[in-house]
Length: 320
Image (tube, rainbow, N blue to C red):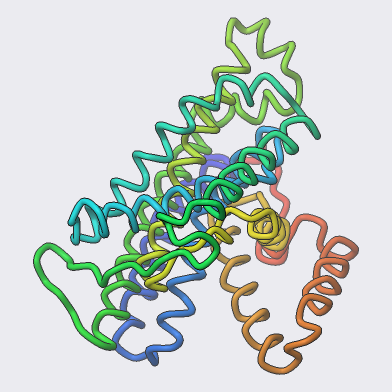
């Protein structure tokens, strides 16, 4: 068995073990930490969407578009449709984002490099502008999201935070397993081939645009899941979810964690949330500068992200 296959086969039990450890921590960690990790895992799902596009050679500066759609889908379904179940709310937000991605994907995947990045950013800012001008949706203030139920169970107080944390762990674990499977599949390999040389992919009889389109739609769905979980955990949504700085934050986390493994976005998101929380607490007026210095140091010393600290270069042809 090659080292690459061995590493791939070890990933699934490692992800399951990590999910079990995080889930077990729900009964020992304080409520504030559970809330912080819930938001971190939610953002990691969006970063997963950014990473799979980066693996295809595309950088999305507008991933907050689907993050916001997922959040507003949850909020609108709760407020106007009377849906209270957390699983149903997440489904509404995710389906809404996928439908939008199906409409926009064929246009965006015709472009590459800076053109793709700017178009994704433009779509996100269009949504931001619409939400800011919409008084029915709370304009710049947004609106609150009612506490959800879980298959008929309505927890209160800290139990609600614990339930939302466990839901985030469950969704994150399933998403990580799914994306691992995607990355090692034929479609995942072709995605990396598109990044290297589109012409050769066409010679193989495949359409690079269709491959990128599938990538775009999948990234939209998982990003909407992250937005929906954020809306449920924070109990509030507003247009800033679609603002360009939010998209920049997701790109920052993707660079911080790296793109070499499905676990990298989760590591990056958790580290980012911890650093930002303490930076805001210790230096509320200069915390952005702190993050800037961290990004600069990362580019200089860890260009492949934090994952490069735990990953070792392995030759795929060496047998074990």
